[in-house]
Image (cartoon, rainbow, N blue to C red):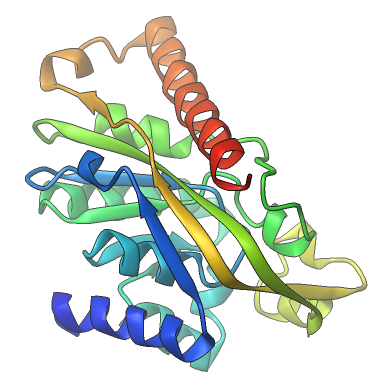
Length: 241
């Protein structure tokens, strides 16, 4: 699917579902550089919403099980996502795949909260703890002028369907995920109206990447992770009012 078709398909899906999105701070979106989009994550619609809003295909890293369910695998890969591999190879696969895409000047998307907010319904202004894999990627990928772009999806009108998919059914496709080893149903959040708030980009220059060593590397990763989490939390506070 071409870039234009991916964006148009995303917008068509939102129209079909009756989802309306409202953009804020659109001028902050970098236009001529590799971009790593970092966003909060509550709905299966999040990749579609972000693609439609930013107007560019976004290559999202998605959960391993999405690549194991036949029909779902076709949907996510058609929209440009790449399912992560099993836990033993997950980190290496993510770093390699995302690095290649960014070096090709593509837009890559990550949801650092992982699957937790997808499985356990949370409020629209809630932000969970961020995993740090994206920050390691940002400091390691050899591209000039990499932009880390925090984006908040702030729903102020939504429908939550609590009887969607049994969690234990998903464990058949990914038994390594402890979140699926419980009773209950996977909630389905469908946005009706949502604010998409673009945060302040965090730019990483090649000369800065030389500092990614030893204890200093851990500090750089922690600072970038905290920056994105705080920026998204502040944007959600604005957008959910």
